[in-house]
Length: 88
Image (cartoon, rainbow, N blue to C red; front, side, top):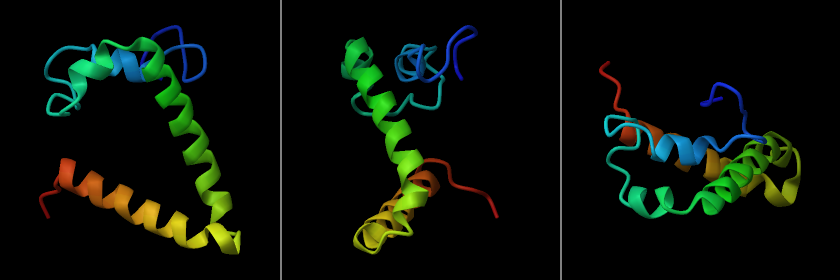
């Protein structure tokens, strides 16, 4: 929930995040200006994120989608580690 009155379904947190101040977590995102200019596309992306994140745990139990879910989860966490390196 990024907006004070909305959520992932009634608000548009992806659009809000891309249009927030220049020191946000997406300040180095290469396509930031393109997506920030397309509010409807940001909404579709937000709904897609919700669908994938809700389906991912269930796809681990289905044999045909298990490999995809494991690879997707691994790549997602690799991307997170690349974007936000931890100082261990």
